[in-house]
Amino acid sequence: MLVKSISALSRAHQGALTAPYRAALRARRFRTAAFNAPVDAPEVTTVTTVDGARLRVHSYGPAEAEPIVLIHGWSCCIEYWHPQINAFAGRYRVISYDQRGHGESTLGRAPLGDRTLADDLAAVLDATLQPGRKALLVGHSMGGITLQAWAARHPEQVAQRARAVVLANTTSGNIRYDTDLLPLLNKPLTLRSQPLTLLGSPVRLPMIVAESLLTSPLPLPGGWAAREVLKERIMARGATSEQADFALSIVRSCRPLARGRHAALLADLELGPAAEHLTVPTTIIAGRYDRLLPERMSRIIAGTMRAAGHRPDYQVWPTGHLGNIENADRFNTELTAILDRTSPRSAAAG
Image (cartoon, rainbow, N blue to C red; front, side, top):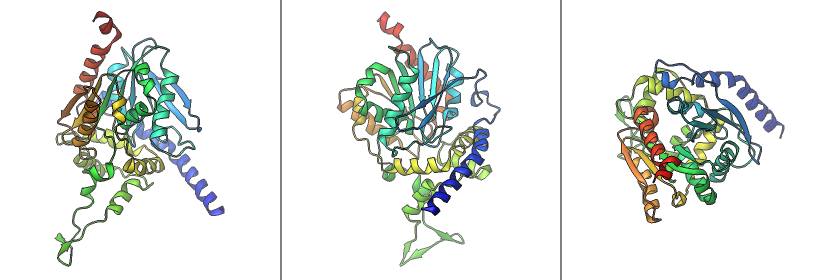
């Protein structure tokens, strides 16, 4: 017991020591203005969940404007959405939050799962949306999983809170077996450029070792090599070094413990037909070159919705996993079109 207590204190002390460094990673400045923090400071609030998690929430733009809620993915944070916050905060109320354990949000006491993802989003919507207001809800990667979990756990809230939904580069589960990212780590091992064999068969890195690299609570390295690996494996050919630098800074700012725990959760998470509860206009955006959550995983979500009688707008873009960064202009244009189609004014005119 004493050893466990000392270990826990050590981890807490280490987290406290590195918090300023993680914050500096989130606050880095880039040549591309869209990657930098908005000029106008946000309204900062804290939403406390029933199990004690404290969620950092930022709200940008006019308080009375039509709301957009941005929900980030695994190992990311509010700052991941800078290209969208900068594009929309002048006209809309743009709301984003750090998912539990990410950014400056705490992990809380509840076991991680689809319930915590869903209930955290519900708590943020309750705290930030004015009565009767509906938001465009945009989820990337784990953020898209969050939206599906929320719709399944709180189906009555979908029509009350959402005017439309965007699911970008996401899945409904089975990541452990359907991702194309881990085969990079599972390729045949070599010695002096020659394949290692055992009884005539190539020796491969065990899948458990590959997964351990993603779930391990160890800091991620920075530098040129890490940036190039991210650009090669996570993004599509044509992604710029600055785009990769921005994404790498965001991911490295995540606390290793939270990153590892969520990776373990997501590997086995299975939402099933949760997307059938998305009864509002829904756009699904997949990346043709997405290795982390390949396009076929988004196709399953679209199939689930069609089987339930819905008609999602299914799009496949020539991007990797970070579509809103790799092609921010197109992503922002698509959000604008959705907002125009689903605005209360358009509905009244129709």
